[in-house]
Image (spheres, rainbow, N blue to C red):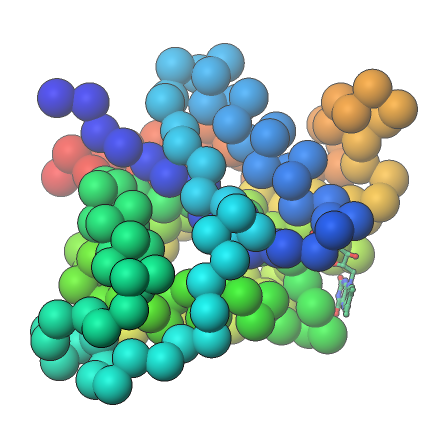
Length: 180
Ligand SMILES: Cc1cc2nc3c(=O)[nH]c(=O)nc-3n(C[C@H](O)[C@H](O)[C@H](O)COP(=O)(O)O)c2cc1C
């Protein structure tokens, strides 16, 4: 049975660089025969978290938006989080999306692709204990794109010298963890 890896895009600005980064991840997936699906938080447009009980309490969700988000996350076997860095941290929409759920994230591998002025190392370092608290399994390989404003040419192609880390190793890490 084929496994589902979802690419969680944590940037919603109108002029965001994140979409080009997520599209690059999706194209690399295709190139390496790793099927990926995009979870674009701009399209999801989740409200600020407002459930009566914390997700780890396991009580039924009260909002349709949470129920739909729960289903989308639950059907994934692993994740790639594409994160920008804002003021040495992760984006608020990403934290909001993570906070909405608990069991749907638990025991699933996650890899990080960060971008910004410095490959979003601070954002990834802050996200790591958060996803671990949710029971997720971060894979060792991390990919950084920096500076992201110089990374894409006029045709939208990513310049490989602006990429650190190996996206194929990140895919492998997620697949191995899913199969273990
Ligand atoms: C509010 C804000 C704060 C930023 N802070 C940082 C930062 O601390 N470190 C960094 O490397 N880049 C920083 N940047 C640059 C962003 O990483 C870069 O603009 C990136 O394109 C943002 O992702 P987005 O375009 O998908 O929203 C910041 C950008 C914004 C808008």
